[in-house]
Image 1 (cartoon, rainbow, N blue to C red):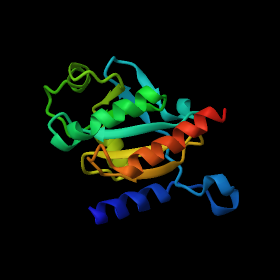
Image 2 (image 1 turned 45 degrees about the vertical axis):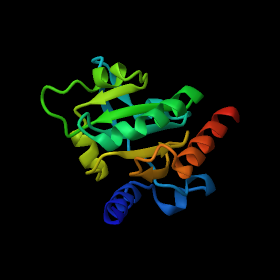
Image 3 (image 1 turned 60 degrees about the horizontal axis):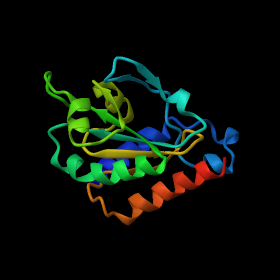
Image 4 (image 1 turned 120 degrees about the vertical axis):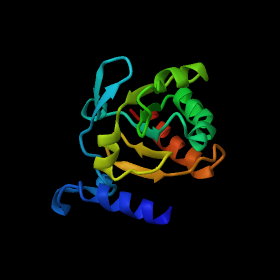
Length: 165
């Protein structure tokens, strides 16, 4: 688990702009521009999300740890921080958006995101990225514990940045 975190961190760090161009706010790794295919057939670019914080939750329908975490992510989504479920490592007949809506979750769902996960060095589920309004990853976690204090602390950090706008 620690090796996965280190690998992902180094991958994300490789996308940071040069040190001379960074200001104090940009001390976190910059998320590269991602184009996600949404379950409803639309496309979503992370570039369009700049100016608002959000969470990318990499998961799979078969992952019991993801299912355990998702109620907490729904609460965070309901508080005002957009959660985007990014489905990867799925069987061909999987219906991730339906699986989420059947469980009462309302967050948007990106599908067929294996290439995106690979681009970021994400190999396991769940992997959840907390992205601030500048597009920087402020926290990456593999937790499945819905009561994880860091999960709620980082969510409040993102929520606080919304109220400052």
